Length: 251
Length: 247
Image (cartoon, rainbow over all chains, first blue to last red; front, side, top):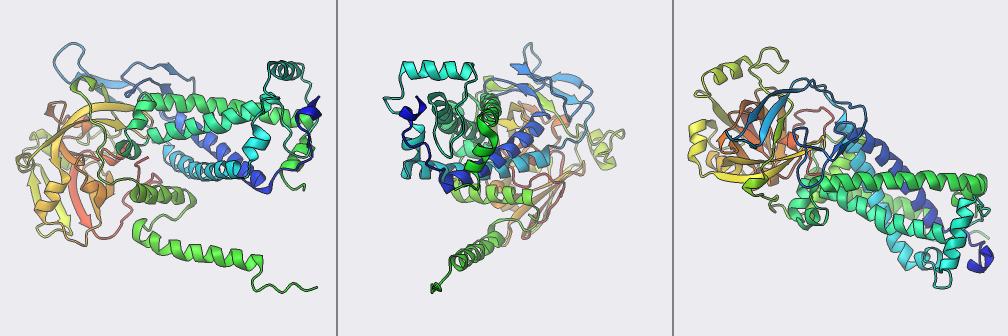
């Protein structure tokens, strides 16, 4: 059954695929770690342009803050009228650790974006996307989808091969990660930068505001972490040694 | 059979890498501030160089409607005149007590006419009012209306010298920041003395604070005391927080 979908299951992974895969993996892990570090300073999320401790939140994560304050000192209305914006000062501050978190996040983002762009160019030029990731019309049928879904639900994982040999769900997931989640996370990340949105204001528009960009960035990262977990579980179930070997040193 | 190449692959790679290194190094000495020593600073420097090379320098940050003005938390130092806090400044306490009548902003360094500008003198300059979004490094945002004098007016009045490269700002709470001339001469970089149509409140940096709209909030120094124009980069804080924060 599988053989009919992929007639040449023994093609090994190309070297550039292996290299970009592991650079992206390392930078993604660094981004997740430093991203969590940044989240701990202000685990509240908002929609639109504005959101802070004095405005209502969309939701707040039960994350222990690395930044504590006792409360707010004297709410002062800016205009002497009901519904006026207010200002209040934080009463108790602990210097937070966000400085290195931010620098680490942006350094890792450089690695991810530059490697990701090289991967995209190489993927189109070499036909990697067309050959290995794009489900052809004969493969992209309801019947295949149903069968692949049933196999996954029954945990019938096909054994590992020495190279690209992907099922329909696997291909779709890779395409979503490469062409949707990673671009979304890069664009929403850039939208949080005041210098970049000054030059390209349309970014704010397409992300529904600066705080919406932050919220979308968070959900995209949650989806990517979810992908990472499932991806690693599948690698283990289908034959950890073979898969790692195929993705690293084995020719 | 012995291979008889003119260059081995290893030689080509090594020569290429050294050539790239050689090409990049002089660029660094011109654009990136020299204190970027560790690996995290490498990313900061890369971001700074990329922003300064790729982005148009004088594009304006978005300005909002009056109805967009939001609540605004005051964080960090909220009163340098309060002796209970470690950022206590006796001088600031006295100035505050006298309603900032004796306050003056000193402009020094690479300027032809160093001197002190009183609050009245700053208010006599043509003013600029802008409703902008403050982006805190913690992740929150707030919108307020700021009124002040563009920093460029004051720098030009003091006669900024051609050799100047950075503007260092010192505050009464001991806080210090520096910006390059692209940000210093940006039309929205102002010395703000008004917030939401009132005098700048003490928790937000009275009597005068800096607003750098194209960088993260902590670059907008509150409680300004002294501005030093300089031709060399001085790492003012050296706290591990990145110097350039347009991202």
